[in-house]
Amino acid sequence: MRLIPRGIVNAHPFGMPFRECAGVAFDGTRGEFLVCDPKANRISVFSTEGFGRFTIGEGAGVREPRAIALGKGGDLFVVDAIPGRVWRLNYRGEPTSSLDFSDATGSPAAVIAIAATPDGGVAVLSSSPAWVRVLGPDLHERLRITAPADKSLLQSPTDLAVGADGKIYVTNHADPAVQIFDPNGALVGSWGRVGEGSGATDFSLPTGIAVDPAGRILLIDSLRQDIRAYQSDGRLLGIWGGFGTGLGAVAFPADLCLDPEGQVAIVSEKGGRRVTVFRIEFEPAKTAPPADGATPTSSTPTHQ
Image (cartoon, rainbow, N blue to C red; front, side, top):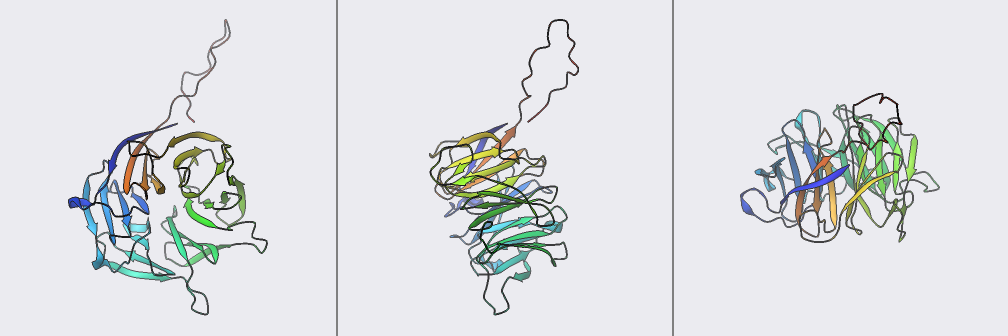
């Protein structure tokens, strides 16, 4: 597996430089990706090649958009600066409704991330109180995952993604760094340590996660300034990035997303105030030559 940088986007359509790059999302239907710029109070839309198309501005009513997901029918779900609120916008950026995540006393949750689900709903992540809520296409809650009393899970969540099979993946700024839940909310996997270690699953600040159709995980570490790919069980597939301004470097990455086929990755950088478009390629697995006199059973290459 390889991540090959193809281009850099550092400005909104019509030339205004990014002031901050935060949440990103991919619109597979239209072949576009969206970038949130909280400081400019804008969401901009680009083609997969990085050409600017249009911008959703202040007229949408969104304040400092921070995270975004594409829902059923191309609706945009946007987390902004208002605690506990998620906006629902149509493709033109016009508000159609909003979701409120407050408790019985009216105290808003600290909603920090949102992700689309395979059936057209959305999964929402709050850091305080720590929970994941999954809403169906009708936006009615169908699942809630909360932190247990011993705080062994969801201690300090930072981002989430939902796989094609409905599994929920959460990054955490505490051990275990990656937590995987099945569609019913049961923990089915966890791995990774947060600290100063140098192992393949050691992290400093995992801040973004995405999952491809085969269940491979792409994850960014904002402090170590890298992008990593893993199998779902934590086996490392590769590391890319590093601090800098050149093509392929990632200065304090903030978020990432994948196209529906898992062939394009979009990574936003808070430090570089830019977005990099990566192409994902898979190399045939290396196989040993057949023994003398043996006949290969297949000539079809396998992939990671």
